[in-house]
Length: 71
Image (cartoon, rainbow, N blue to C red; front, side, top):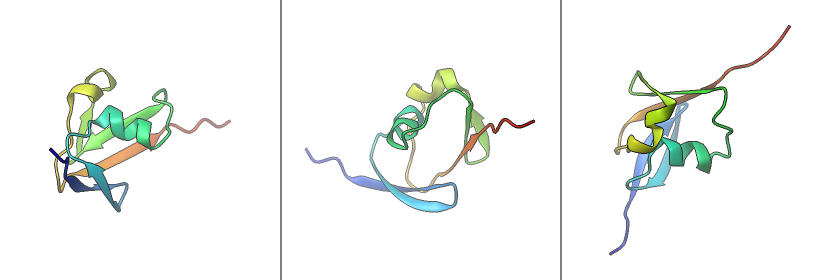
């Protein structure tokens, strides 16, 4: 059985991902270190501990924000 791709918008850019991709999968695919990252899906913050349990669906809008340190 072939996994069909789905389209989601990540930080304003349409992105094609395999169906069933979780928030944790997306962060890993982007090569991001989870520490210092916040993720919102359709405007709702997804807590880091639930990233693996939160599958993405076609058409959703994902915002990945990183905390910048400065001084």
